[in-house]
Length: 323
Image 1 (spheres, rainbow, N blue to C red):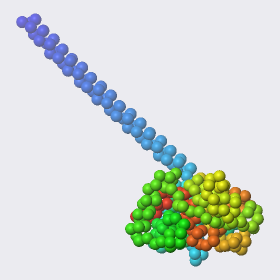
Image 2: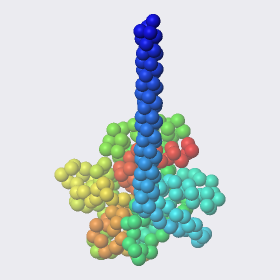
Image 3: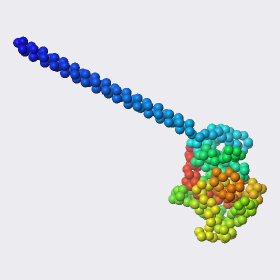
Image 4: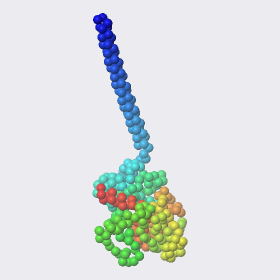
């Protein structure tokens, strides 16, 4: 009898010991899980602090400039812009500040008084990058003005994309459906910029380096640059007869301001090709050209812009009209 009671007592004691062990193990497991969760949370908070610190460092390194944009009435509007802001965005901000409805005709123009030329900025260009090319003592100014010709390619594409080999083609007018079809066909090409280049060729006046003398040559527009025949009035388009005047990989096209008076230009319809960083009139790398009339000049300037920027011109225009 005593032996049975002792055995039962021993069994109960063992059961209590086993339950106690399981409880201890469970508590230890729970404590371990809590520690892991706490460690994960601490690591997450640390990573977030590092991310915020890096973001603040990047923000501190972003180039910022105060700009002053002049309007046609002489008034100005100032803005703080940074290197992440495209010309299109800044133009919209200036339209708000000037209380005008944003339309494709409103543009930002880089006016270069020392070079007697100017350039309408493209909407996809980064404004600060362009302004950083100005010299410290530059007299250059930014203009916020109306220039409908910037996007006239999309209102009258026949003026720029059709060949002008005959007077009938030169005076051809398309309806809205025809214009849309012409634009779609042209910008669905597969050239270097996603499109080809318009067929533009003909006589232009070229200014001699360092002189106020101009000579007439036959020019041809190609995707890689503008070419001319040194044989003067010859209309030869053979590659062996053409010399490259300027390429478009780093150069931009500018329009003339008072060249007849300053450079004895044969007409007022001048344009230049140069690197944006060139700010000295004495540079031999600036190429000065003149057309016989405004329409011819407009075709050449637009053709060079198309060769330079390609499909980006259409993307810029659509972003404006579809917003």
